[in-house]
Length: 469
Ligand code: TXE
Image (cartoon, rainbow, N blue to C red; front, side):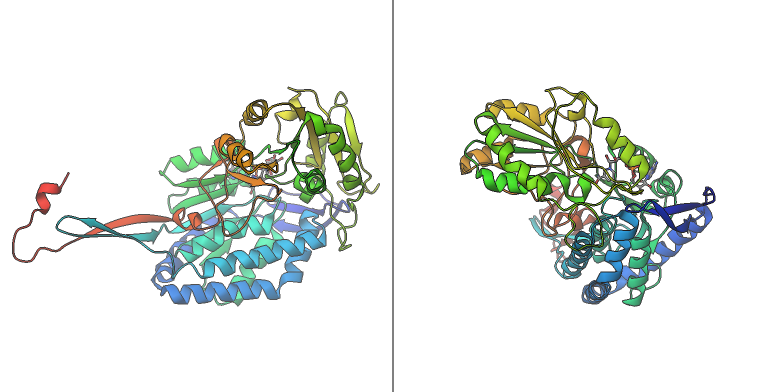
């Protein structure tokens, strides 16, 4: 294996540790050209009727559905996801495009009663939207930004993560096959520090939608500030699941492994801190261990596999460094002993204030933490810079809502560990992000409001001027 140049990324299958392809990086000049084409394509894309834009996006959704197996195989190979999970991700991409295909005809402005006439508002596209995507869910997260942006009449330049460009390139191909006009949806492959930064600073990129780490998100925000560019940031999380004594413990314990460990824990919504009320702590652990034992870890090609490898050797080392020897281990599973980037599913019982409780681990690791009172757990869960997702397990409906209102978190589930639905807004509070993706809010984030006042005045003067500010 020869050393990579700075103009390419060597892709390594995370399950085997073997190189399988090299992907060239786009140059800055190339990228400028793509941005210029994207801006030009926007003129006719936004001029299409809403119905026609919707029809084209619906065709794109059908092309994605027809390509499901290919897309899933790319995700499995470049990101190491088990094939069943990778298929579900391809299905989610299809659903997101199908949902937003209905949006162009339904994204309505308003009419506001004012003196002397009528005020109406239009939601107008911003222009060429830059999307910077991460490697953890390469296709779904690219779709969350792309589908609403295109539906609203914007064009898109997508920069996938260095380690996972293949799915994005395949989407670009499918868009063209589905009949999206040239330049409407483009992909540029390359390094974040070079091309991602370039998109964030470029005067002709009208908006950035970024998903990744909080540190990089802050850099993107600063770069975008140069041109007062709006930014949506979906950043890290360090989420909690809170299990009260009155919860359905069997259901909570059964859901805990997938809530914390899906995608090998490389999920900004992973519930990596599990707080269990003290009277049921031991009972919860007894129920959890068999659920952990039942996890199927290993070959991503096996449709029964639930847990695959981590994305890279470097990331595995980062996770391993956080799991320090001083933390009591409640559970440690088995992983294949081969050259892939495996890390065993691990349950820890760290003392309060241990550093692992401050970091986004992003690996198949979670912590069990006993608590006593509602107020105490609210304080402990909120005591992190993050605020993305979380779960509350209780049979007391009032407590569930009281807790949900008290937690500084963007997405909560009561008696469930799921967070993301394409119909509902998704995003974080505090250092977990800025703005929302998915659901109706996603369209507002890729448009701006124009207000038009239409005077009712005929040839006679009106009272209108008196009401002006
Ligand atoms: O993220 P980066 P990394 C968290 C998770 C993980 C950590 C580091 O904790 O361990 O971040 O992952 C592009 N200007 N999450 O280093 O650097 C980069 O090319 C513009 C949480 O992979 O944030 C990639 O496309 N763009 C998470 C994207 O940013 C830049 C998902 C994300 O990379 C850039 C992933 C720059 N200066 C990691 N530098 C989530 N929120 O789900 C890099 N990029």
